[in-house]
Length: 166
Image (cartoon, rainbow, N blue to C red):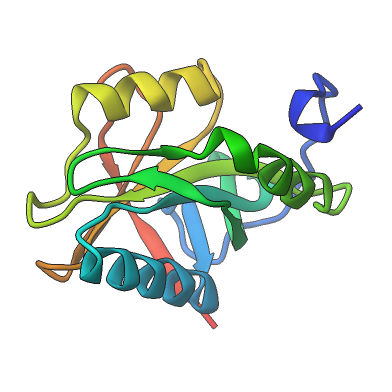
């Protein structure tokens, strides 16, 4: 059974976070990949999107995540909408199935073209459908304004602190 459809739960390992009060740590190369995708799509007047892959840990403050890489596939997109191309879902599922046993989908990313970084009503519905009440992040990037922000999975998603690490 593909892992994207699996309901297996994993034990969350204890690991003290390097900076208190930060819920998401991101490997710099992953941010570079997202920025390059967003720039390339913006040049074609299209949004982009994908999944954030990483690990979840817990410490005395609670759960936090470390994003290591991204997974995406072909998209159906224009300047204001984006979705995974149904014809390319196998590519996306293969990317998810290639995750290591301790990796998870910890969030998703998408771009806005010259609208700034915020969570639209559609974005909030997408966020909640992906993660329910669990931990999940949404990274929104606006390559035309040179902005990005990360949002949590609360009822009304709030910006969270993120640290980019080497």
